[in-house]
Image 1 (cartoon, rainbow, N blue to C red):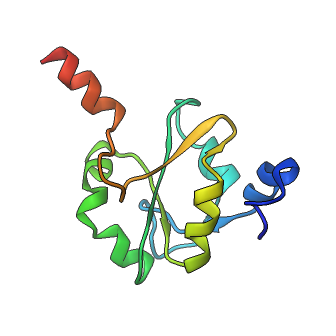
Image 2 (cartoon, rainbow, N blue to C red; image 1 turned 90 degrees about the vertical axis):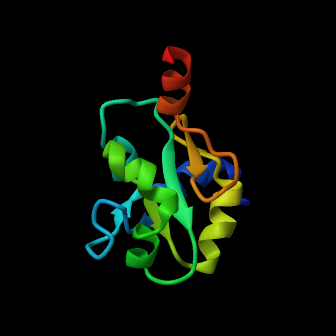
Length: 117
């Protein structure tokens, strides 16, 4: 996939990408278009985690625990090319793609809880 270089077709190409999800790490992969369409909040970030091993290995990572507790799904990216794609594909359909494996990731509910507390 050339999603990083073909800017004019980036969204069309990205919609075809398929990855396993936290909700079903061993099941059929979800394409990015369907993954983005799921959920109530059309502006919520799309979360993903990259890493080595199987999708089931990533699903057991402590980095996704906060998402699991909130019932928020997350893409599980295990192929080396996935890093390249996500470095260049920073948003999809006006929703930010957020790598939960990066240091300093803040979730929207953490900010809300800090303001309430």
